[in-house]
Image 1 (tube, one colour):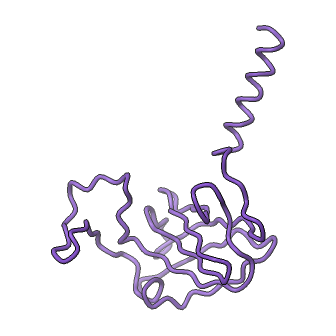
Image 2 (cartoon, helix red, strand yellow):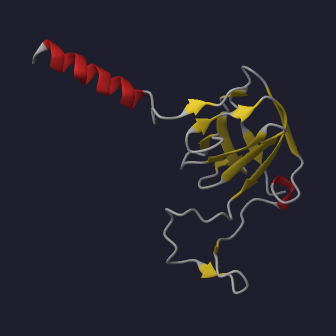
Length: 144
């Protein structure tokens, strides 16, 4: 393999290893990530909404309950300072299979069962402090 191809290959590998590559950290924001569990089990497919005075950032948990908060598709992170957190599973994402879901008669939208108690979403009392080096932000939720 030629030297130029090795350099090109190394560059491609570096971009892939860095993740999406196109996402930047918003000014005044810091990275926020963590794990969400419900009754000590990873909570997959949940939306984590982190609300600060600088705006709202969202993350979506994977099959291991891990999330990374994003402000937008091109900007990652969460505003520093006090934050309110809402976590819910009733969100239907555009890339989800909706074949087994019911349709809300009033809105015409698909709806899913909410597994997370209201005290963590519509009536959330979850509060955290977003600091310069505070991540990870883990949430251990219970149904009790």
